[in-house]
Length: 203
Image (cartoon, rainbow, N blue to C red):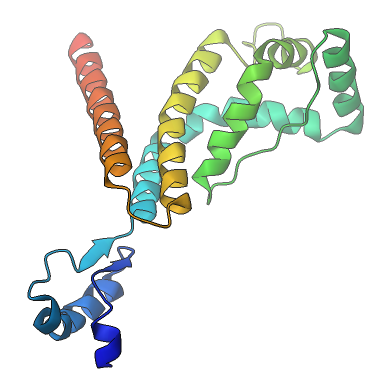
């Protein structure tokens, strides 16, 4: 046991309450060796990023339902898949198949938008021409949908890149972490200020 204790500087765990209780019992043991326990229990950065993005997606995810419906409309029919492929080739665009995101994986929402947005023109025109609607009904996808999707993609991209940094780093890189945290803080503050300004403008 002593051999293990002398090799421990900090322990990284997610935010589960059981882990916190376990560390409360472990701290007195390790404090004798380390002299302090200020940095002993480190919260998992990836887990914190997941919590932040999942909370944000609760609000914005319903706004992306039109894209999910459009993707499902094409993928649910082999004839429409072939028709979309032919339309892309006739437009000089390399065709690709788009996948739906999954509720339990926020990065799949990011990847769905990242793959879809470069094909905005062909995808939008094909859906506008082929998706069934009544004469008085609005189109499934509008320019407002695409503008909103672009903003959501920019938001998710920052957290996606941050999570990749967490996953690929096998050693501590404080300067990269500091830059990443500043970017996240700047983004979150900017979003909060925009929400406040929008609220004030509606008064």
